Length: 538
Image 1: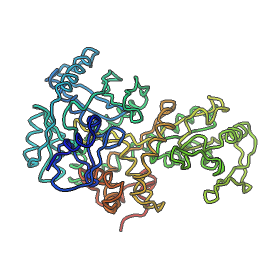
Image 2: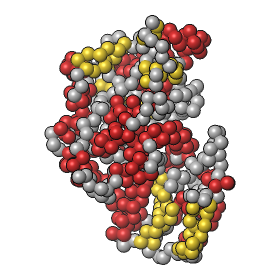
Image 3: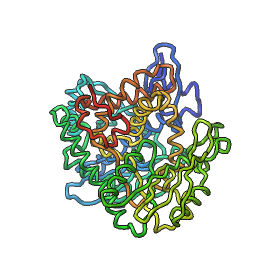
């Protein structure tokens, strides 16, 4: 009998300190886990997604303890993640804003906790006790979440006299957390952690003010709706308020689509090309269609040009480091030919639109012609749409850029946020299984490559957008739950996707499911229909 921590030191020697958790028979465990029998053990470091999540959870707990030490009267709010950072706020009794001096005091306290190598402790206690503990500690959202989840026991972590609950394991002690940075940002501050592709580096100050403004807009809107966190969402669903949740959320989206169309209409004398970009499963297709309809209401005649038809022939497609075709790369598109045709269209000339045959991997022409009329605007959607190289020959005044993403502003509780990546992965998993014949297992296994492509090709250009559209809806994970859980349960324990399936199942377990019959209130034009389909439930 020995702990994973002991086995790690035996097996990895001087490198033992870089490992943050372990997969035991394909189940993620903290390094304090005791091994009683023979098991398959894989230690994970920061290069592994589970290692990064373990590091970030643990680091956020150290931040919480440091804030409690330095500013015992202040409330810490960890709201959402933005490019290798957690966006946080301190709520002071006198409502003052954070200062650089505050950041330095908190940084010093975090460094002291890390240098002291204070251990993290884990204990399962009855949920009723956990509720009382969190209420006494000033965490009403955390207490409500445990109440609405309906489980008998809750896992509680301690760091000295600080208490919290997390949705995955922590490192054994604070000494594992060597690298972080605090900086003031926007109306709060960022807790920055190492870059996923370079664990020895923390990014400089990000240029993400547009993104944060969109997050804040939806956070404030959640306050107005009374749905700031998963516990309050569960409570509304359990109280029979699902219909109102859906209709109000959809009404907000309709107003945003109309506002974007109004902006384009106001620029109609200049704008001829509308570019819609966003990461996987961000709702780009629905966004393009909804804005197109709103433009028609205003008397404009939008025309959609599909970027996928400008792929280079398959044999000319670049390959990634594994030798597989890299369809996420900009070089997978015939940028020169696309620019030529766009320039001709905007110059009033007629073009013959290509058609890419994905079965043969060849571009073809079937005689389809296109010419832009005076009242027409061209809409083009794709992951590279905001990359300036893609439309380098088109004058800037003729372009309007839209960035769409599912920026989940709903929090788990005061100090645990919901990853926008998780929301998008669950969306894609449900859509792929229903419409593309791709299993949840395949979607999970493909996701690291998708994420890498997004970091290289999409996120660096998001702040170039003229407007950002948040396609997330406060109720969507409660809807997606009933569609995703059966898919995740089919993934076998021997699969490399199994640990991720367990993590997502645990995550979804905190949501009260929207009853399938209540899905009839979701409009057929909703972005959620892009993933769950339009067939009404029986």
